Image (cartoon, rainbow, N blue to C red; front, side, top):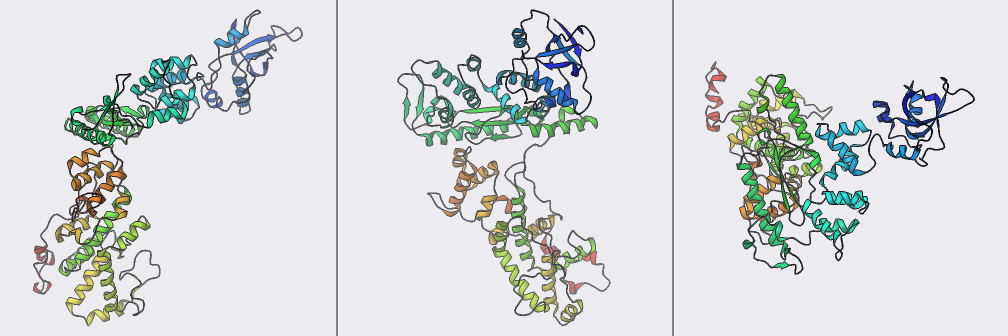
Length: 609
């Protein structure tokens, strides 16, 4: 037996080829062969045609490698193909034995999940990303993730699968089980008397959570006051009162979280109960470089603390920043990155910004002297709105638009707009309630004001009336969701309790579980917050709503204001990002101390202000 390279046109299929099905299916092989060429030689035997044996036109039959041959033939249509590596059989060679030793791969992959897992895991250990592994073998990233999940399986179960004692479906479901659950299932499987569930029954067994073993408790069992059910024929015992268990378990999880944070970990992510921990979708990262602790909780109460991990996306961002630090000569050991997602979603920031803007500009109406100075500053320095256009009050959704439109602040502002339009003669009596702004907005195409008419009206007005109009125009052109709103809110002492109440839209937009749990702590106390740390966001938001309404047995909390609505705004996590005030803290009385009528002729306005 020898190996030589043979041109494609001298090869033909042999009736001895053992593949009878799937030989035409070559789509999965094409990417690998196009990228890497033929790695595994074809098995061929010479065909004697006349007396040409040993000549250059000698032909060969393919005994093993039909799919590779068809893939090469397909690639030959795209251009020239290099000679093919082939093992030429000698007379008497056992074709079946050689075929078994040269089992065809699917895009160079072994045929079962375990061998595929080992191939992928070896490359991942070398630092390849899932996307790189998928590209190398010409398969989907989903398939790579599925095979890497085999890493969760304990050795006895893998061996049983190799012996075909366990089917593929059962093996795949068991990838979602914890090692303890796998050991319990394996014990049932090996028992002559007990039944080991499979298929849908296995999923229910893994995730149903009907039985909570006492071994899963993180707390001292003496703190549990309910009944404990013991297995008379085994060593396990179970909690009879699951609600009491979860209150104590969540409190213990909260204490562990606090201990991790006190010990210098950047964040502790408490996952939803039953959420599957996908180890292969995370990368190990040291605590000193921003690694987090992920807390995985099964439905039967088992808790696992995965220390020093980031998601692949977060780890990629960290690697980029580290590389940038190396290029700039920075100490790479000190390079870290804030990989947490923002505390507030974009729609929530929009919601908060518009409500705060509505309150501040309405309160500005009562301080025309400040509005006068603001107007002068806008004219001198300019802002993003000083074309001049009114703020569009653009809402990201209909729910946010309706929430702001129905607020006390916006209703009060609309009423003053109606009066100002009557003063300036903008519109007739019949249409002054149509909501049209005094200062046209960007989207008000064709809208214009007759400046001569407006000046003619202003000339005959008292100063206090003109200042009233000026205050409104300044408020209408105040840029929403800006540092100026933040500065004015602090200067005016704006209390959002006078203008806003938590509504359904607020709770719908609140998504960050860590922040929501902190809100529970504000309105319901530490015990309740700790007892629900692993509860869903929906459950925890319901607790906050019940406390505000005094329903479902909760003590009513009056005048609660989330930190986002205070001036200055703050958040509940280190990931909160707000608007920086455009002005330093100032005393509003000082700003209004000098009346415009008291300025001497020729006095420097900037110094007097």
